[in-house]
Amino acid sequence: MNSAVAVAAHAKVNLFLRVLAREESGYHGLETLFCLVSLADRLRAERRDGQAITLEVTGAECGPPAQNLAVRAAELVLAATGRRFGVHLTLEKRIPVQGGLGGGSSDAAAALLAVNALAAHAVPRHELLQFAARLGSDVPFFIGGGPLALAWGHGERMLRLPPLPSAPALLLQPPVGVSTPDAFRQVDVARQGVGVRGAVALDLEALQSWGSVGRLAGNDFEFALFGRHPELRQAFEALAGTHPLLCRMTGSGSTILAVYRTAREREDARQQLPPRLGRCLSVETLAAPPAPPEAA
Ligand code: C5P
Image (tube, rainbow, N blue to C red; front, side):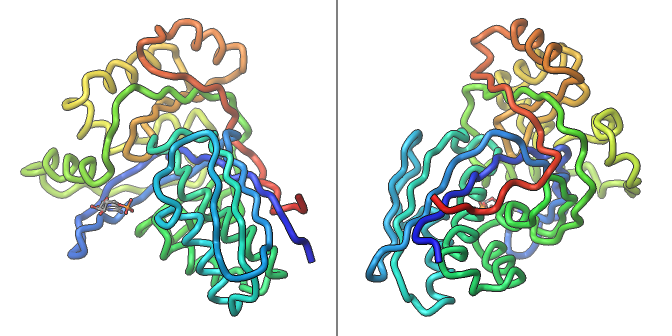
């Protein structure tokens, strides 16, 4: 049995995101198309004597370890396997925090997989999926095993789709902080008096090429947030002006994604963007499932 494993925790983007009705719990139903990108944190998990879970983070400030989703994920697996050992987690953060890229959720999914690997895969996959759903809305997608999935509910119900071809993309981060609860509130406010939304039929073919995914409706948070945050709208308009196949805000923001035909077009676009719009990262979308945890 391995005494230490490591796994890449990839970021996600939402290729479309619709916010549905507000439920009694206060949460909203969602309908979204998730896609993994190459940008990833790295999580290493090492068996330790005792029962403690410790965490060391480099690259970003993530708040107190006890509240870290990766620690809570490790705790769920250790509790389910009889607390036979402790775990030391090392997290190298590369995914910007709170940007709508799912970094915290991906770290949690990576911790579920890595600690389960240390426990000789004692927790069956369907149970890991239940743990994932308890940890947060985006976590099930990250342990789902595929790079592209249509998800609904709170993101815990999914249809895995044949991957889109890997494509060059830019992630632009305007210097705007958007809190998730606030973003949902803005959607509710923006909707008041607008009435119920129309019927939608999604065709599988429309989810199989970048051109047709780009023509689908965007992200409901865009409309709700652009009025309040002019920097967001400016960044979006500048990126859309570089003629990508698709331009979208991801999650509840504030990162904006643009997908291009070629790496050359992406780099040309990057040159055109004034630095004041925000930090820009070049990534590729993934067309294959990420590698499972490996001995480290
Ligand atoms: O999932 P998370 O705890 O990050 O969500 C933070 C807040 O965002 C929730 O308390 C809720 O107000 C809002 N939310 C929502 N519908 C969702 C997810 C989050 O209304 N599906």
